[in-house]
Length: 485
Image (tube, rainbow, N blue to C red; front, side, top):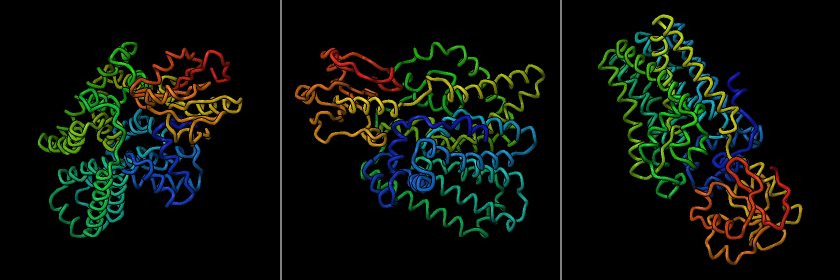
């Protein structure tokens, strides 16, 4: 609960959150579907999450805090169930610290996105799997509730996003490796309706996802998938995020942005490497080399398929797309932490230092300004203040962001005073348009890909009057804008 209170804020929504917030704010489910369809992005491939957040918004509202405050309903049960399913008090302590303090999970606790649902469902699936692995002889008739939980969580995973339908194969394959053949046959015989229901629903979800792909629904492609993205997946999953530069810095800069944080990142990487290696060795001894390798393939095959598809289709896969694998990371690090702790005082100090970095990364994500997200709320306040003062505004940012934060955009952009949406403008448009008093611009790699607006700002001698997170605000030299500095 403390992690949720620390992680979740009422700060401005950013691009991805605003899109789903527009869906959640619709008064009817058909209206929510129409809005989801109009967006026509990757949100269309998160059907169960879209339905969930819409239902929550009808009860709690569609404000920033309300949309995020429902994430603990997935996070808390998942963390507790996964922790209690682990064998031994020491392992449970390690698992609880890793899961409850995870930088990756903290980051997405503070987002109105599907990732907390995915983490919670995945933790529940792996909790049941751990119980079955530790109790291979328990009568099948006593496992009905766990089978139902396992099946429901698998469906939730598959329906939370298209990529999670692929990753849901990992716990299923792991069950085939971990559980004795007799146990699997008994489960198949006694609970066949549950497994048939899961397969049927997965098939329907698969058909739905293929249909959305056929219609062209997909995430915005800002850059092709490359090996740097593969490294960044590990960077997020293993908790580096809060120790390094902010994501906006990483997007806009090269490897040089990591230089000021090199000492912290390298020190943490060294400790992580020791825990990871010792954890792999400990698990290999406990499970047997062949079974450990088989389980490793259960993780790598679905994940590798997604990475390969991202490279082939030029879709950028990131760490957040693998939140469903976070229980695997926790198990590996817990095994490594326990093995390191048993190696005398130096081992104990190393584990304490690692957890200081792990929890410090989470706290940094919550409190450091470099990790703040696009400040659409402050940008909208500046736009509304300018309009109220009788000035004209160009809005070079997400149109739905203006709508959510109540910035009226003129249909033709010629009415004075008024605001005009100016997204990736053509040079001819800027030459014929009436120059505005204020220009509010965000993410040039998204909204000014050809650089025409940047060229216009330079040629027209607009002055930078305010820097907000992911926004710049520019004014004509003759005006004196009233915007936050």
